[in-house]
Length: 104
Image (cartoon, rainbow, N blue to C red; front, side):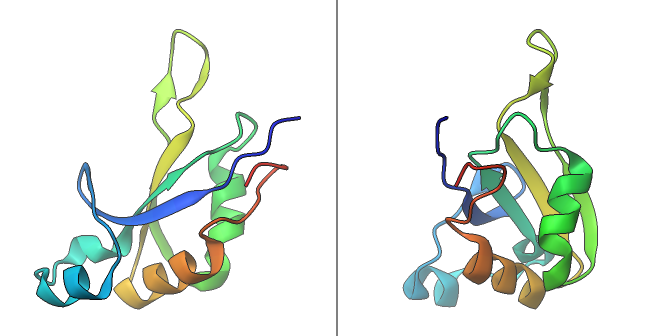
């Protein structure tokens, strides 16, 4: 069985950003700091599974798991938006590199 590590980034809509201190201090403060890109998802992961994994960090406003309709599965990544930026940062701190369904 393959092992994958979840990779989580704070993201602006459709653009990933890196989380280093210099970038965080110079970047404009936008509501999109609440949105996360979550990569390395096992094909078994569904929206309820992601919600259950991330709800301990705060209220979730929206989850989007892009589908590969030709293959009949998701594309292996998702976008998850928290109600607050602090909750998103807590999720990154705790879940980056975590395993989900044996994939990390």
